[in-house]
Amino acid sequence: MAEGTTQAIDWEALGAAEAARLAEVHALVVTGRDVHAAARVALGFGRAASAGRRVAIADLAGEIPELQSLVKGDDPHGIVDSFHYGVSLNRIARQIDDRGMLFVMPTGSEPEVDAEILRNDRWYRLASGFREVGALLMLVVPAGVEGAAELLTMVDGALVVGDASTLGIPADRTLGVVPAPYAAGEGTGARPRIVTPAMVASITPPEFTPVGTDALPPAGESAASGLRTPSLSKQVAVIDPPPSRRPYFIAAAVLVAAVGIWFLVGRPQMERRAAAQRAAADSVARLDSARVAQARAAAADSSTAVTTGPAGPASDSAIIARVDSLRMLLPANPQDSARAVAFGVVVLATNDPAQALARWTEQRQQGIPAGTITQVQLAGQRGVWYQVMAGAYGRAPQADSLLVSMRDSTVIGQEMGRVAALPFALALESKVGRRAAKAVADGYVQREVAAYPLLQPDGTATIYVGAFASPEQAAPQIAALRARGISPTLVYRTGRSF
Image (tube, rainbow, N blue to C red):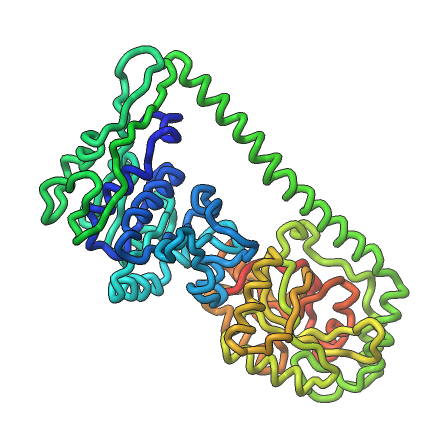
């Protein structure tokens, strides 16, 4: 396939032809090196198939413009939110036609779909469900990504867009191939190539013979009963640049695209990251001796020193002595400020430790991720308050997805909870093996410390307790932990839930 020519090909028409041939398929992956072409093939296939059955197209490639542009409204939820946070598929499926037969399921609040989602055996159940009701599930997936091979085992197979010879997809999992109707090496100058109905009808590669079909049905008519497909009689012009100019054309196009993407995406992200770093630095700078004195007063006002609940009274003198020993509270990993998982959900704030403990225990039993209890002094309030927290995310919409899921599943009331910026936490242990992480966290829980593990990029886990908006907010909990013989480290919270 010649680089730079696929944008002008009518991929949707080619996809529509496949819909007629694969009318008995109910769940398939659409994949290829050019994920934009794959998305357009999926749209053409889906529009044709939706004439006779409901069709859902899932964006597993990360906010592909061809699909994302069809999603209306400001609801950020999608596939990631459904798999990670329990948002229902009915909520994330967005109707894109007038008859309620064609839907797009966007990527969601995270820009990428991770390998764990692709490997999730929920796809097998979804494929079975679509098959039972006679509907069609299409999953647009980039070629060769981690987890794609496992995903293929849970659906009917793959429709490959472009050159299939280098993708390594097993023949028994390949439902069809949609190569670009482009013949390389014809002529020396720029001239149009024409996609005709005859060319569309001949796109099945020699190595693949569709089971039970000798040829495509006539244009506009499907092998399935009464299924109409769009006419393929419209010709599509594809312009090839002269071979001598093609490398320069490609290089210029890539450079312009890279600059444009940086201004649209990279620059705003850099500005937001710099603003977050400045805010964190300002927060640390404000932590002077007056703040430590305030923390001392907060700890002294508390009649108990607990971390997850009523762990038993600790003497005021011991707490004050611990607070007196606190120097300037600075996070131990300032280099990680830009990648901190700075957002979570504040579920409840109470001055009753027993109430906080009961709520946290209930959340933990229901599998709510990164649940903890934070001891803080709230502005305008006397004594220590206990905030029940949940979630640890790098973006606010991700935390909002968790909040919505908790409300929808009645874990909390519709008016309860709020998303908050909580970049700091107390690290209890680091470099814990992934398999041992839960057991280590459970060990702290048995000591009534609301610990939770987060998986780090190197595959190990860090065990945390608490989540704080500022370093000074952590002072009461540090004092309480030290009074019990536990030495936490204030850090920027990093990692992700298991």
